[in-house]
Length: 367
Image 1 (cartoon, helix red, strand yellow):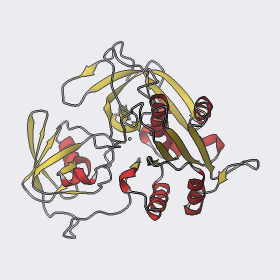
Image 2: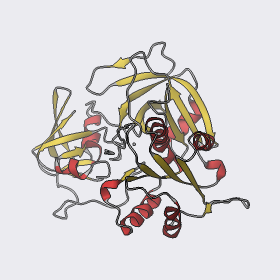
Image 3: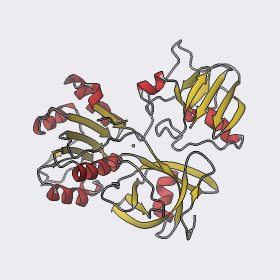
Image 4: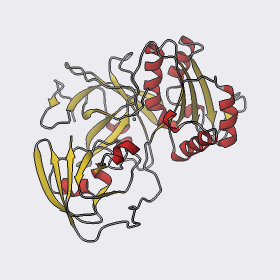
């Protein structure tokens, strides 16, 4: 197993003008999951969109006269759900996360970039594994998709979900999770942690810290084939990573999906943080070659977009990998490497949204 996260248009159309596929999908349902989180379902087009559990959709919406793109993990399962569904949680000053619940209506059409992401796994009915999932807040979104697919496709596998939230009212998908735990009794183990727990709360309360994690892991079943997945606030995931490291869990068994960029500053191997002066970059995409100069304080993607060059992108923070390309020559500094695996970095892959050319001979091939 390998885990590698407008107004209505009468017809769903597929844009084939580039190697990436774009769709205009009709909103079929909007559900208030909590007071500050909604789920949005989209009708599948005539030619069904294939995706894997754990992947995300990029929504493209004009907000205040500007095209805004944001990546949202799919909470639907390709095995159990007919529509594609994402969850959106309001955040302070969030441009898209506040626009969607305030403006979107059933029947509207949203431009969508094809599903992407490598926080995925292949399912097999013969698998007998234990997935231990750590989620915090909206980090439940990709986990929901993985949970439904695993329960549906692998009758011999089990899941333990450790899910941290502020209070009961903020638990996204609470009723769905309870129903799944009932329908698949013995195979889905739910462990809720509340920061602000009510007086009659029987579960864990407080922050998901080291001592609490130790207590929780002592309660979950011990299986030889166990994989650990995490998605949530950076601090929570760091606590989980530290504990798993203490317990000598093989890193090949641990996978995470990040919704926010890390806070650690990155520098080049030689200690430099940026190149002096503009550097020329050549980007090969969809059969076309684009040459342009990139200033030190500007990313490759920002420069391309300012020049009207339509390159693929989504999160613009180095996490989603929609802008991934292979550096064929030259050297590129990345502000954030979280979205790429060690193998991808060794093979020369870079992310144009957080990439700065260090030399003048940079050539990047996308697609």
